[in-house]
Image (cartoon, rainbow, N blue to C red; front, side, top):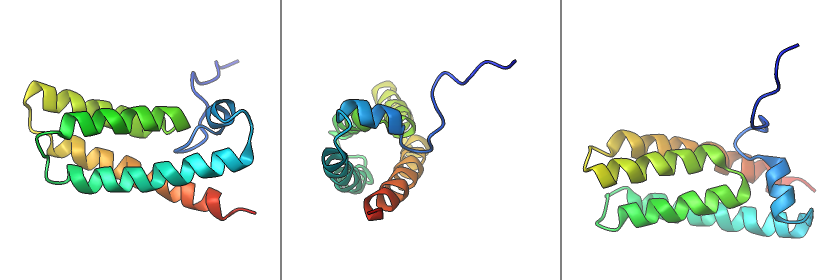
Length: 115
């Protein structure tokens, strides 16, 4: 019998984690998902030019993503933060982060439209 995955595959948002973090409060889930969607879009827009504070912005996005269970976004933000800290070319990490955020925001939009 195969072992279960270490993390559930709920798609871009770990729904079990989100429910734990919001104590199962559907209204609070809706609120934090909407806030994350807006914040992640703003941060990505700012990160596009890789400003001097890009590592701090990536760190902020990483923490917000972990809080709602958007672990692919958190991992991509961590990789961007590491690339910036190492002085490496961060464009690939930024592109990866953009893709992860787009997937998460698409999932969030679908969740927010549910009755």
